[in-house]
Structures are given as structure tokens and as C-alpha cells.
Image (cartoon, rainbow, N blue to C red):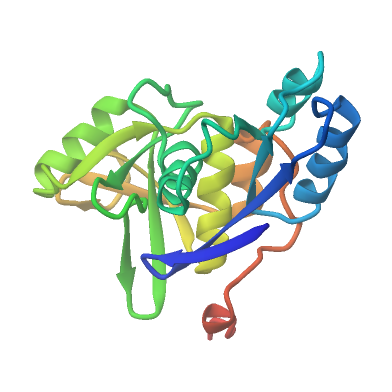
Length: 219
């Protein structure tokens, strides 16, 4: 089963593998599905087995980033969408930045960004304190909350930014020799440098996967 949905202008994708066999689901079945999911960038995988799982199958699913469910645990489609947003796009409050932190809209689950003309900019902070101060100075609370980006969340953040052809800014309190805006300095970092210097998670596409409406070249 494959399901796509759009929220905040971004498309999200969920693949669900359902097994109703007389035996528990095997590790090889999980690995076969994981390979299909990994071939499709930005897809979250969910496995459902009516008769449980053999030894090693659950471990294999966890190692490959798949969500494992029994029939009794099978959520509604609405719950699956919330699972996708909460666990993949929007980090939980317990996640620590590796090293980045950013802001998320508590209503839509989308990461913070701002626009200038046709350009979209995402804001990354090197500490929770910087992000909290920015939210306070910019009067973003209570709708926006600060969250840390672990490696899998940074991956989701980059894929989300890719989709809208966003650019990345590292934001910190004003430092010497920088141009301040509301007491903060904004330094752009390109996608290649962001990945090479700070990302150590699963593979990312070499070329950004941009939504059709955002594919025109910058002048």
C-alpha cells in the first residue's frame, strides 16, 4: 500500500507492507521491503503482520528505519500521517541537536523558514539557547517550538528543504564583522557544505529532489 499526502505545501509519502500469512513474517521479507523503501527517497515504511514476526525480523526493521506493527496496533490513516510528521519531519522534545536546532510550527509540524522574493530560507541554530532567543526576539511563541535535529531529522529537514528549493542559513547572536538583523547574524551555508561538514546519516540524493513548481532556475 502506498499513500501520499500534502501538508503545508509539501508532499509526504508512506509505504505500508501488509502480510497475512500462516507463519510469522521473516527477516528476509522485512529486508526485501526495506530495499524497496530505500530506493524511494523521502518515503517512510510501515510493516504490518497478522501473525507476528520471526526472530530477527523486528531488529532488521528497526535497523532499516521501518515501523513494525501488529494488526491490533494498526492505526488509522490519520494516525499514520501524524506518525510520519511527528517522528520523521518534526523531532520530539527529547531529541538533541547534532549539532543543529531549529523551530517547528506546532500546528502544521513544518520547520521554520522565511521568504525574500522567490527565495525560501531555512534557519539553523548551533544551540538551543540561540533558537530560544531568536523565537523570543521574533515573537514566534507560543505557536513555534524549538527542537533539536538528530541525524535522521536533519536528513528529513534537508529533503524537505530540497523539495521547495530552500537555502540554508546558520543563525546566531550578532558577532563582530557580521551584518546584524534584529541582533542576529545570518550566514548562508550551501547544501553540499552542510552535508559534508555536518551530516553523517543515511544516503541523500546527490541532486535535490525539487517539486515541479519550484524547479525554475534562479536568475
